[in-house]
Amino acid sequence: MTPGSPRAHAADPAGIVVACLLLGLAATVAWDAGTLQGNATYGLGPSAIPYAIAVGLAVLAVGNLITAFVGPRPARETIDPKAILLILGGLIALMGVIALGGGFIPATAALFAATATAFGRRTPLTDLAIGAALGLLIFLLFDKALTLALPAGPIERLL
Image (cartoon, rainbow, N blue to C red; front, top):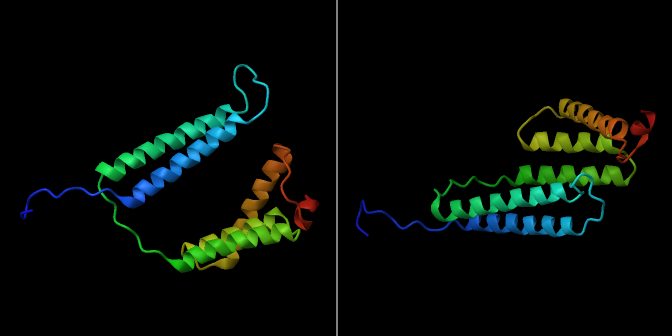
């Protein structure tokens, strides 16, 4: 190739992997939707929304695949292992608090604080308070408005 001549565009391997993962997820959601049992009311059954989500995931997969082959290759960000470990630690804390009977609200507060710290916030007590407020709001919405049970601990039993 001479300087100034157009360079052949190489496919983006990360984009191809993401497209394949999205397509696999779409296939899994569609397969799972096909196994749902239920009566259709007015033509829509319980599988209507999962099928719509599967179609949306498949469209995203195709778009990602096209971009991987013909689109511009995006600049890659560096990996921050501390942030990843903080978010994973928050997820582990969420599972641990729920498994030990602590309840949904404190578990959500721990996850929120860990994730906020991973994104660069340096106010853990404020983040715990915000996470607890969001957890309380979500718990009340699910438990009282939608009558769906979330893991209850000492705080949730008082509500």
